[in-house]
Length: 107
Image (cartoon, rainbow, N blue to C red; front, top):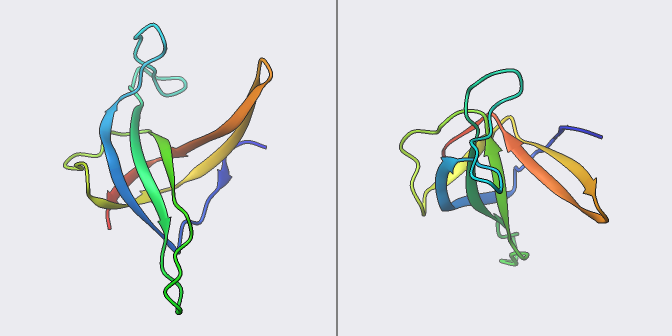
């Protein structure tokens, strides 16, 4: 399954690494499929919103690939992902999730 839409209602997302141009292991800029437009990556920490009894579950850091450069976003900002998706990948005996979004905006 590829590009499964994600509903992050019920989570607070805080920027922990400001958006930067995404590069591969050799330092080459990665671009959007079929174009020369660079991709961007941002680190966000997703933490569940507290329940009525005050309980908050564990959070997790996510690296999210963005299609556009979100201007004015800084470390520590609370944000919302626009058009968030997740995809599962497997390669050479390893596997994981890839997070993507069209962009993000201040929450």
